[in-house]
Amino acid sequence: MASKSLWMDIQVSADAPQLEGIAECDVAIIGSGIAGISTAYELCKRGLSVMVVDRGRICGGMTSRTSAHLAPLCDDLVSEMTKVRGREASKLFWESQAAAVDRIEEIQKDERIDCDFRRLDGYLFQGRDMPSETIDQEMDAVREVGAPVHRLVGVPFNGCADRHALRYPRQATFHPLKYIAGVAKACGHSGVTFFSESPVEEVSEDNGIVTVKTARGSIRARHAVVATNSSISDRFAIHTKTAPYRTYVITFEIKRGALPDALYWDTEDPYHYVRLQPGPTNSDYVLVGGEDHKSGEANDADERFKKLETWARNLISGLGTETHRWSGQVLDTIDYAGFIGRDTGSKNIYVAMGDSGQGLSHGVAGAMLNTALILGEDHPWTDLYAPGRIPLKAAKNFVTENATALKSFAEYVAPGELGSLDDLKRGQGAIVRRGLEKIAAYRDDSGALYLYSASCTHIGCHLHWNSFETCWDCPCHGSIFDVGGQPINAPAIGHLHKVEG
Image 1 (cartoon, rainbow, N blue to C red):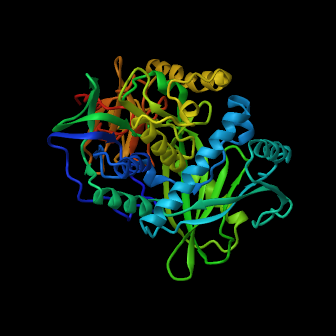
Image 2 (spheres, one colour; image 1 turned 60 degrees about the vertical axis):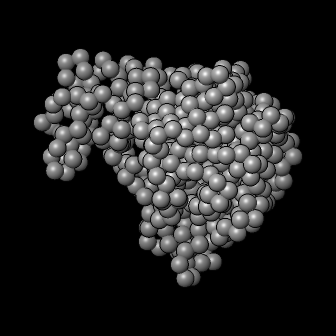
Image 3 (tube, rainbow, N blue to C red; image 1 turned 180 degrees about the vertical axis):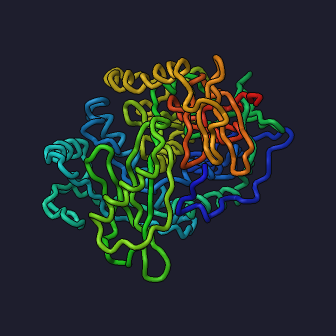
């Protein structure tokens, strides 16, 4: 993906080699985002030998594209989660996410990681032209699960003095890659080995041994944790319960103190979110995010960023110049909790996926849960996050999200976006029909053509071009491919089929 986030100047385990030959350990972890590295940390601190393998650079995936809100309450509103999971499960969800934030605070203190961690208030406020009843309903739901909440009117944005709002104390934020770099360093001191640029081709289990295979090597382990944002160990079933969404973030300079340091998010659809990050000298960065859409269903990033900037400049006084803009992908689950635990049908393979907009706290909660399960311990969160669960009350969400796949397969009979490859401009990607074949075509700045099948190698959904990130997005389950056909985000493992020009 082409954009660069505010965090990406920090390199995590930059000297990690490729996996070559055969290696052995207690636990192999696939994926080096916050879920994978946090799991490695918990396991090595319990005395297990651990190896972490990633298809790209260490922590170069979606964790590096977060906005880094550490807000333990359900991102899709507690009132909505309660309808699907009930009060007790919603309470347990809040407790687990809050415990994850507590764990981050504890680790950064214990390991002396300078990552700008701080506790602060979070504000959910009434969006423009949105009813105040949403705030009332949410307050009741939050109180029912036992979380602290305060009702008020007004937030420190222009024209928002009369907006109804909820204040949540003891939320948090930090610099995510500074934190993860520190955790990875601590892992290294405890014997964890990292392998980068080593795409995993297969995860198999036989006679109690899990084998993680790459093109140039393999790891044999007693257990494996698949922490790849979207699982590569389950081909289909778990992915029918998730949906990928593209989200956008833009940052501006602002004078320190011009905006109270807090987390802010509104009730609009799509919603907006705001936080501060310490900048140089007497300045801060303001991160403004939102304008989400289903992955692959829009290719209008410039318009999304214009809307974000207009929204931000109307509400926040003193915004300076823009410094960064990027996008990321979140994986929503149909009942708002991630899928964490023993993979269905496996004995020694575990998964951690489905962030639902709370990838950082989900990643750490998942590390705590999977570590306990690997060690044979009972854990109160097991059923809440069980990968094989079938949330019957989320049937409406299930049908809505899986309609994307039907729509995607129907696109194979539609015309191409361009009449021929000759119409493809430099720097442009598009779908071109050639007979019965749909081609994902890209022409680089020198004029060279890159031609691949438009069929995702996961289950065959129709790909869409993402001009902002210069990549191909799968709208069904979130796979992403670079212009050379290489998968750069799970669940796809295989390279796109090359087409002759």
